[in-house]
Length: 91
Image 1 (spheres, rainbow, N blue to C red):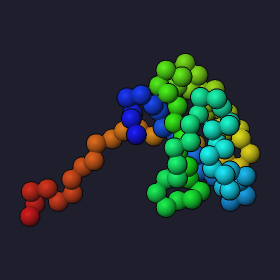
Image 2: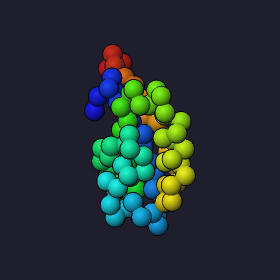
Image 3: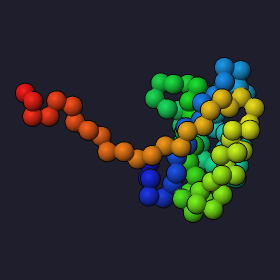
């Protein structure tokens, strides 16, 4: 994944969503979307990407298209965060 070039959006699918059988068809909701894949072991959560240039210009339209699609229960824009170490020097 390249957060410099793309914005990533997690799409949670309803149990009766038509996208559960063919999650790659999420990219048909908007021409700027590319299906990246499943999030971990969560079959009902899929990741899509949008080129940064498109996101900066029409990101609100893309979100509205996703949120208004049948079978989509929620949409969450992903942000790159640095991982923190647990435990550190406490040992």
